[in-house]
Length: 379
Image 1 (spheres, rainbow, N blue to C red):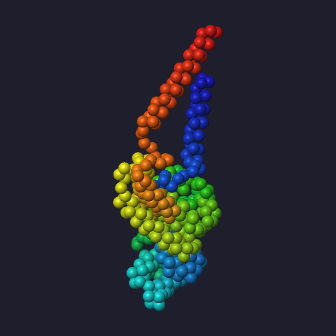
Image 2: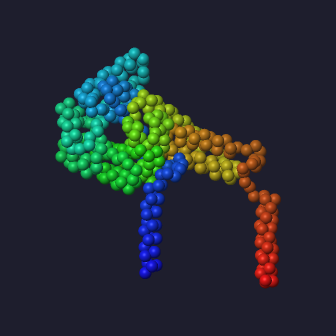
Image 3: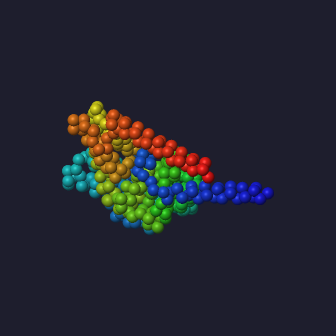
């Protein structure tokens, strides 16, 4: 009876330990290579600008923001007017600075496809925003971020014609809850992104265990820096944006749209450099090169290609991959084919040394075991 009780306690204790271990996973260090297989189907990085005034909307439009998160105090009518003013400013700038038309057209295309992002917590708030957008004939420019359970958003959408886009939301540090809500929002057709926030700098939403759900449920991840309390202890700057993108998020919300546009330009430039580096590396010859160098070359090339296939890789990841690949290609060339430190090759001397070492260890084992056996027999 005592043994059965003890076994039950041990089983219960083991189950609790397993549960706590799953929640503690994000506390372990992660490496960039852990995310090499997180492919985002060629999607590009997008960003949402925090807009408290109409001027904020105009500034965000002129740098190509995909969403304008307007404050409750900013009327939709004023935000729409600011957007039209921004279009006029973009066209005027082209005329005065002789900017290439293709760049202007691309920017105007992004402005025309951008949407106003409004936060709601229940159906009543969603109705009020929806009616205001319909009154302005701007339902096609509206996206609602539901800070509520997925069933609230789904129930509200079921009665709307035309329907509008939505973004799911979760804040917390319980991986099972985050995955479940992501799954439910992903099942709603009009869900564009799933936004995740946490107070914990090592929260579960930053860990590969959760980020993999973006792929599993065919949805893209969003992270916002609007509220510092739930921004995972990170500042609203390029270093943090790059970190979140490296972890698998493809939509970033920032209060600094101009800075983010500059980051995107740098990211695109680095991607082009990596593309050229890969193209040049594929032409390199591995003939008569030590095996360890060829192995490093193959690994570096595979890593660089994986980052290019993602379509939305972090700038730092691409830079490191480019430098690594470039170094690996340079190391394929040796002077006169000579082996240098770090290379490995089978030679007669090395084989003899290995055999001698093994024989010595075996002999010493036999010697000490025989002496130990004699002492035992003499006792």
